[in-house]
Length: 285
Image (tube, rainbow, N blue to C red):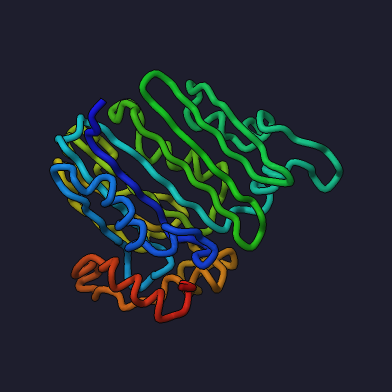
């Protein structure tokens, strides 16, 4: 089967210096990906996007394609600073000694209600942590949770669904109810044109969260990436929540692109990002 396209995307690493090769820097990841996929018709295309004023919230994406993609919408969410009570669901043994299995975590957290029609395969970790994969017809979703206080994190991804039948804002609200993060980001990738993406091609309104920035990036093959980052209202003025560790912030220190009229004047350069990471001593050669 010939390869049609490849996409690799991620947010920021909470423990960047602990990553093995080739994940010590984005340029290293891009070099590794290009060795396998750089020969596709579009070549390898790498971007780091986000608001320079909030260096802890950046999105990395690599994309290469041989042919234009079929119409599709993909949502990726990264959440940090999870609500302690909601995060406690993902500990295998509670303070009172009760042992919880993955299926209970799925029900108690509300994950089963995000897209109720999905068939879920879930897994719990010792002493804490959770992951699941779910399918329904052509739709696929996955969740990963690290609940420890101080560096709690959850991710959610879904693709292959009918964009006209599932409202963007409603789905995001269901996910947020499961985790109650202090900060989160959404990255929506659209193929086939914004018109067929319905609500997914519009700016997200996340109620009690303030939108810190919104960036749009065209991708080869007619793709469009829409990235937004949010902070809970109580964190919007004072800055990063407690769950963002110093080493996380240190990776993000960089020479950033200027902001003009509230928008990015240009995309962040991933090569400059890596140079600054090395300068700051995050990477150990």
